[in-house]
Image (cartoon, rainbow, N blue to C red):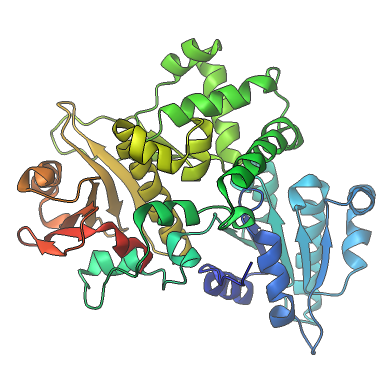
Length: 419
């Protein structure tokens, strides 16, 4: 596979410049090891690349577990450690090492340790809390469509600025974009190869890796739970309904869903709400982190869904856009939160982006190749509720024209996402 630059690289290098420890987490096979090894030379010192080790190797893991402080002392810095979550004992040793470096003041403190892991450390407070003020945490997701197609990756930022100059169809069809925006390991592989890979991937993640971060009584239900969540992608999450379907209590179901999020297989988008005098739905919506993986869980390819199951394609498309927005906000370091909006009388907007100053931007997704004013009805309700905080809204659709529908209201082709 040809080298594909990752759009998070700039953020990662900046984090190493200002923080003693940088933890790059994300699901397995998102390209973390490849990226940090590519950067080893750039972040090294005195013409020497950064040292590298991985806890995926049993002997290395045993050494680090038995004597973590001595283990760290045995490597030249900067040091890259892969799959760091496999040795929880190393986190306290890292804290001691960073504090000692600061006291000694003999060498640069920042950028000494670059860690990777396949579980969300923020979900394990006893680990992350020990490194508060010493560690910067970033997440590497699967390819965006812009990364996979060598785009700039600033489509969302341009969309929110209404900067449409030069935006054009780059020849990448929507179905191809969905298929390319996934795990690097199966980039541009054939349908059969992808299916075999995904079966093995899910087996490894759900039946082996989970045991490293949690003790679950009914670990065998995780594949079934993920499949149920795949059928409900883009829908409001109801743990009681899911529990009845899977045969667990709602509390246990919520716990198991949390495990899937820790493993970066799923993610939630929380509801947007304020005290604005209108009843709003306050239930999150659930999504699968990779849209082709979602299709695989449904035993269908994206092409099958588009041609034979058009009633499902809208949900698949919404999942794809959700992942693209999540990744672009993350990769670009955009200081904003992603929400959805829904009133009690079913007026809704697929996605809301809110900045710290309270300004909000609305994004609706349509699979059709045409847009009418009716498609903006949810955005208009949202605009009325938010007043001056509302900065604009767009309907992303399958057509090819950029069309204004009023002040700061636009219909935009989906390909704006992979500019």
